[in-house]
Image 1: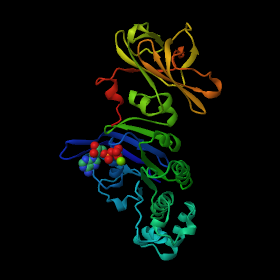
Image 2: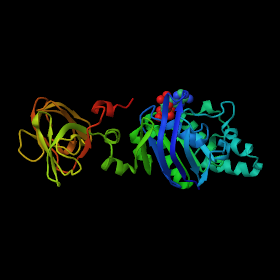
Image 3: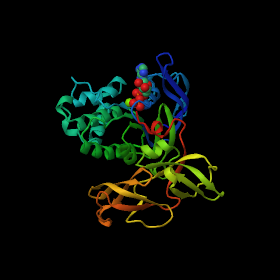
Image 4: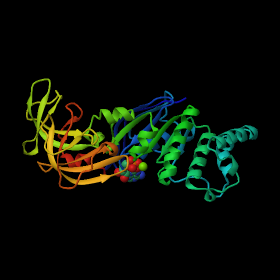
Length: 369
Ligand SMILES: Nc1ncnc2c1ncn2[C@@H]1O[C@H](COP(=O)(O)OP(=O)(O)O)[C@@H](O)[C@H]1O
Ligand SMILES: [Mg+2]
């Protein structure tokens, strides 16, 4: 069973003008479901194609199952590659598609038939062996693509936006099936997506990528609770960002002055007086009350928008200093608020993140394209 190790991988295109992947180090553990998550163009597909052996890195090493695979062509890497476009042979029926791998490998007929039956059962399509790909729904075609990859003996599954072309409902269903399949068959999977909800639901760990680099690797919970970069706090879940600078610090906690002199307390010790920082607060961390209430980390503002969303209410508040924050509260526990209403939003000291102000500015840092 394979683990996968990438060491200092770099890949450029067009004579070095496009740096698609750079300084990428990653260890995917044996039997792990790991997702590469990041906005379009950040280098996910390029990374996956290098693992598959479809393209060569300019620099760095790739190990699969503790073996350096630089000289191994794709067919010797025992990987199954599933794309967004259901890449089935259109003129072959389901059975021929799935038996293709074992046949090419020269397995005897009995053995390859047994494997294919097993795989089709796994993906719940044993009844459709005679169908042509075009006669099947998108979700079914993607299941067949999986069965085909697995029948060919893949121990390492590489999934490039495999659910991307499917309807929302099927996409959510297939997420769980995909994960279960990988776990039941004790495979290792590297899944690529730009959809954070999908990544959170399906993965053991997620590697968040931006502009060719991996910013942070962690479990969904680690990334949500302890984002190490502004961009991660932005891309995983939702965050409010407030700009300011450290106005006081005593080695235990700091006071940060936001725009227009609003003050907030943090337990952060890493910054020095006058450092420019950005505070990130999750929308569900804010408490909202009508009127002006005094307290630590209480900010005053007016309701701009109030939306009932079923489980939650979502409220946009314009603070006194002009910053806007989004507050999400459980609908059943929240009073209705009207636009224009004066409110206090507060958050407990320590329930937020402090980041250094990004070199190129906040807006540029958070851009996803
Ligand atoms: N064959 C190629 N030739 C030139 N540029 C490429 C090629 N493949 C990818 N790129 C560029 O490399 C960057 C990363 O692409 P890709 O890995 O496909 O991103 P993602 O899968 O995250 O959307 C993009 O800027 C893309 O335009
Ligand atoms: Mg891609």
